[in-house]
Length: 325
Image (cartoon, rainbow, N blue to C red; front, side):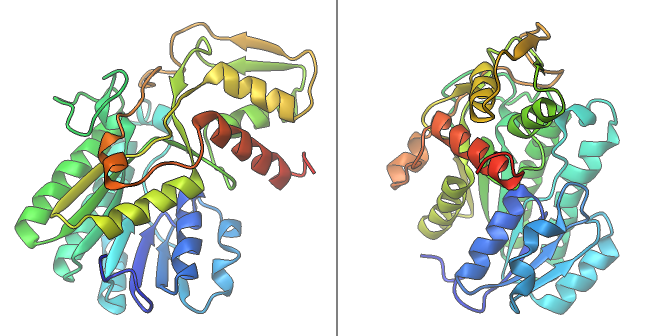
């Protein structure tokens, strides 16, 4: 086991007020760590941190990671032991319209974090990468698949970030754990298909427009399984660069997600209309699944199937909104 995740360890979480970040913050505080969160509330919400804000071991810093001088001041003041870097642009569609978005908010934020780690001698990084780095590689993709040709600017920025992490590790004796997330679901959602469908059906229960043909199919992992896997990987691997795919062992179609939400909302005669393409938008990968043999051989398995994760996440989101008892 790595020694850093013990009581009184000081941890930085970037993007800590978001969906995944806030759950991670809660988990880190539960095990007795000191946690500093950076978020600019582009998608993150202070309400997600209501529990953390009552904990004396938690500190919230509100600024943008592009503000390098603010970031340096924080690194200089806090003496971090480890960084969990989750902050990034999560609106993949926006990245193809505003071309600076992923360069600045996904790649440059990573570079700034790495630069501060080098300058202030922080030696451990856990980085949230993405299946988007693989582009349209298809299904059963292993960690060593290549060459890689992302089709979204988000995926390109994540892949470039991985490359810079590799170089920083080699040049400045940093250890990195690169976790290639699938689609992650749970409560506190800020975006994604469940969030969007519930919003649409709340406004108009009679109809639902679905981008694409509904046959897009991907693995969905519940937030608790994601966090469990991240800690498992960190505690059981210690190479200079450790990289893993994470996913449920099954996939779920967009049409199935729509049907689950309609059923859980107890709606009848909903007119589902598909826009017709094989994908939701330019840069969307319509079908993919991971080969998770690497982490399975290490000893980790998800507790839920993709469908089970979707069902629980829908129930949690509807309950959170007061739409389900």
